[in-house]
Image 1 (cartoon, rainbow, N blue to C red):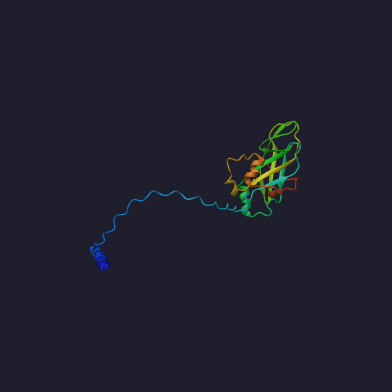
Image 2 (tube, rainbow, N blue to C red):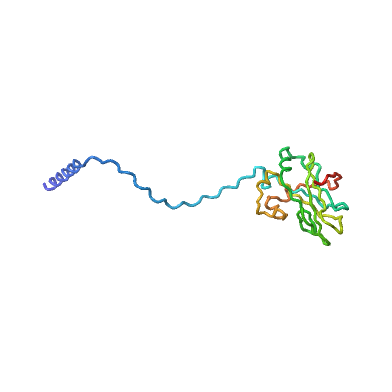
Length: 208
């Protein structure tokens, strides 16, 4: 009997609670945003993009000529009558509007010109200019200082040919008159060497 009375009392209490529940109020205003949580870990680095011209050199090359002898005045011409044989018209124009750095090698060292080349017996200054003539590219080199011995033999000549498309992105912090540093900055290796074979050019140009 007692259990029945207890069960009846519980049911009556639940009914009373439900009947006492009032109408639900309106939603309150939105509270202020909490402080941002800590940043998550950085994701892995993406792959480097490829150069649009195919490789880090951006079309730059090293024009190479082996041992070269000047004339009795101390002048010489480095050039190739078919340098642009495999170039498009746009590529030729980009080279012509680009920049160059000429190095004369003597006694194992590369000397940038315009500037002095240190021979064992004296230092001689040289300058140069470039000429684009049809498919040919030429670099007349001329003596610009007095010399006890004018006729000289250079161990080799190397010209960094930097097209305009790449010249606009040159790092100003690089010493472009240092051969090793300049080549490294351009991403060039011996595979980028374009050999100039016609060392005995008879073509003459007026100094510009």
